[in-house]
Image 1 (cartoon, rainbow, N blue to C red):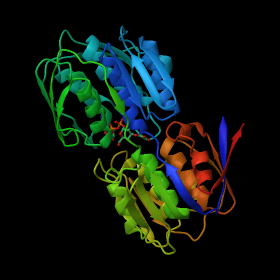
Image 2: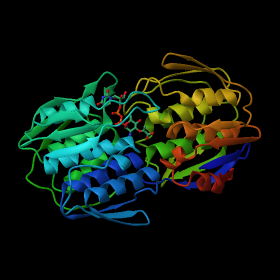
Image 3: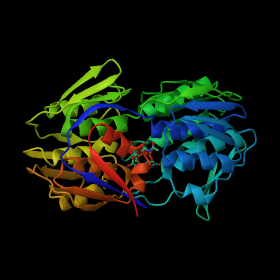
Image 4: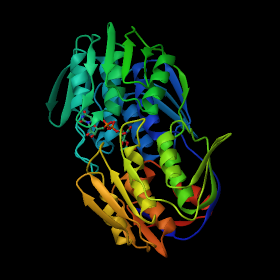
Length: 419
Ligand code: EPU
């Protein structure tokens, strides 16, 4: 298991190229199961979660070839049961449910277990599949979906915490091959949902309204192969935006889409940093006297929950009192106790974190507990005095392509150590 040593205090300057989006690539790769034809997906990031998804596709019977960022798949004949051994490693495996149900009218996939960022039920996915006419049974730890045919329906996917991203993806994928029209109300509007809908439309699906709360899907008889390039990862970009604000004299995020980052850019600007749109992305410049913030995470286009931990790290050393409220995953605060070990002053009150800026953080051994929490610890380490040792780095490798190399190219000093 690798660990990362971050030597704090080094200024960052230069260009960082943003990789393809993990959360777009995962459902898009799953969607290739909807056709017998070959599909070519480019700008696929090299991440462990992507490797798991490719393994699931192979185990289901698809042929998969990968060459530097481009994946070719062909799912000529597939099974409808995904193997537990791989599925259990990644919660996003649930996004094969929709394509399997759509194409095979049956899907057997392990129920995702608990997750460190909170309870992550799939009741809304199931509700959507049932509305399309599927029966669902939970049996021996698996979700078993079956249908003689799928019929279009009007479905609301709004849960207690708002819309569901993978639930919207799943129901949209199954509905492409249903008879008649499906309307998803309270749909997730994340750019990753739009990217998936664009790919499905290239495959011959008839989807309108992706990116709004109401998606309309006209079912078709079959889908064909297509090529697609995955959008840039807005959360990876947001993470480097925060790094650039914290430590940057000037950092350029090449390929970052400023529109997808609007809320994050607005927050970083409000804190007093200079952020501009440039020809090939976004530029951020540090400044001497940042201001505290009040932030609430919300579904897109609101401030993303996947950037909450990184903003926490930024605000730890911003003088004054900042307040962050997490509404999407109310328990997603595992980074807080680790940041406190580095000297941060944070009080948790339910789903709200009250951050009193301190003049300095000091490097310490810390434990990563999930992907974005790990990113926050690396960011805090960039600013801290001395060395921060981030353990359990496999979490960060799930979602950040070569984070150590990318930050070192900007001037950071990060070592990856095999233990
Ligand atoms: N929810 C339900 N029932 C459901 C599904 C979700 O109550 O059937 C609740 C969840 O418990 C949560 C809220 O709805 O409180 C939103 O969850 P959502 O379903 O939108 O999350 P997800 O689709 O499972 C994706 C991303 C997450 C990201 C969330 C929210 C992927 C692979 N994952 O998860 O990304 O935090 O949307 O934007 O796309 C990450 O990349 O670090 C990550 C966790």
